Length: 191
Image (cartoon, rainbow, N blue to C red; front, side):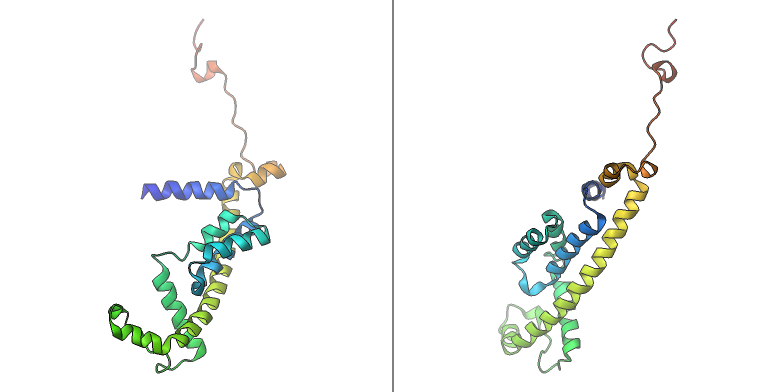
C-alpha cells in the first residue's frame, strides 16, 4: 500500500506544480476520461487524445492519463454499463439484443448470437458510450478542480501558481534562521 501512496504523491505533486490554471488541468483530464469512456473507439484512444490535446493546446500527459480510466481491468464493467444504458435509452426489446452468453465465448452459441444482433449491440454501445463519456467528463472536471484548489489551500508552498502570482498571504511563512549558538550546532557552547 505504501507504494501506491508514494506514486499518488508524486502524481499530485506533478499536477500541482504546473503553472496552468486548475480549470485547464481539469479540462485535460476530463477530455481524456471522455475519450476513454467512448469504448467503440478502443485502440484509437491514444491517437485521438493526442490529436485533441494538440488541437486544444492542453497538456498531452494529462489527457493521456485521463484515458486510462478505461483499461484492461475496467473495460468489462464499463462496456456492460454502457450497453445497459444504451439498451434502456433506446428501449430495445430483449428479442432485438438478447443477453450475450459471455461464459460461452469460445463456443458457437456466443458468436451466433453476436452475429444476429451485432448491429443492435453496437447501437446500444454507441448511445451508452456518449452518456458515460458526458457524465464521466463532467464529474472528472469538477472533482479535479476541487482537488487542486483544496491542495493549494493546504499546501500553498508547493504550488507554482501561487509562487508565480506572488500572493504572500497564501504562501507558507519563511523558516526562521536560528544561529548556530542557539541550535547547538558547531561552535555552540564554546568560550
